Image 1: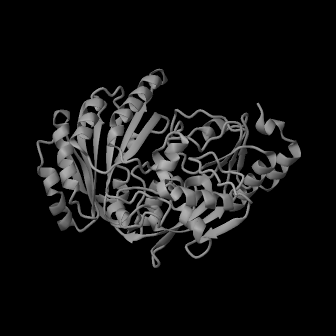
Image 2 (image 1 turned 90 degrees about the vertical axis):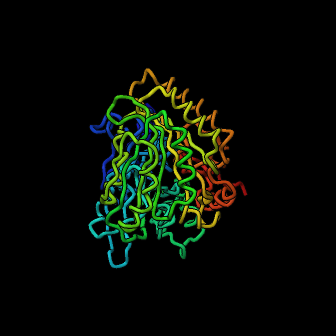
Image 3 (image 1 turned 180 degrees about the vertical axis):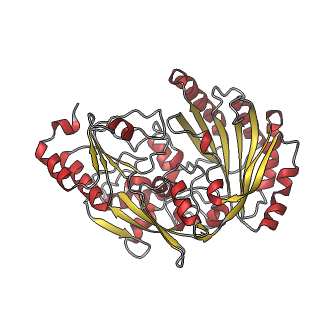
Length: 459
């Protein structure tokens, strides 16, 4: 194959001589496992996988790829559904071995390297009774989630992951290493809070932490026959939800493998136990639920509550968009379309935006999604490759059916691998033009393009 096989051996040998991580070519032991990411639908073969152990490895791998004229991809946790962490025939800069985490409990900060997942992050911060907004699924990588904004269970109280970001150690396209903060490279710091992987390779992140040991969380599921009433109740309930309480709704299938469809509320309350019981009482009193599993739990356990629904290696195809409100017509469309869902692993999830996430200015960070409302996610998950076309077709048809109710805003971390440039512009809205100018400054040749790409504005 092309790529590394066609490069002069001395260049590769020079990289290998200094590299402290692992370099894998297609015939190397471990290559097949290393090229696989969370989404089993992605099947690409890099010419070289550079498994970095530190910032110097990133600098060297980036220089090698740039000098060799090879496409670059960057892998953090490897969870992003679009699969752009893997290049076909280029160099994958793999950060998944970079697992360093250092908590400063006195300052209530933490620094985490680019390969850390939220499960690993939460475990370390929980030792000190601290947390910050992380992913809804704990196997998600800290890097990709944060760079795309980072919605999670604590968004009503503490905002997005990106809203809690204090600094980034970033290797930019030139190979220079920048410490990026609100004071140093402020334009770049603004862009990194939502602009994705467009501006460099993030070697590590520093976050603000908050005191949190325990939440009241879990699942309340209703029979599918009550789905429309349940979603209408959810709309009314979330209109007055306190900041401490995040409730997502979902049309899902029973986790026992029976395929029974359900309408569910997923609950996380991060306030005092007494207030939590008071705030969720209406949720527990509504209707005749088929299942109630709500209890006090450590925050890391809450962050793992949906993990089993998204197993590594399953085939994934997602589409999502924001809604300002859940109209009766939108609810009816969701329920009717879900009744035709071809996979017992798929779901439609509704994520409520309120509280702290909406108190940040639209252009204070690169993330423009600051209005109260809902992010609707059609998450198709299946295991049989023979049924790929069927599942993708259902997802697209469901999205098309809901399109009249969308607000024209998209969450960049949920964009798939087949989205148009218009989808990326919708994800950034009025912030896109500023992002393109910053891209021109730091990556004028668009070296970092295997992402939800922001093209540099031509001078």
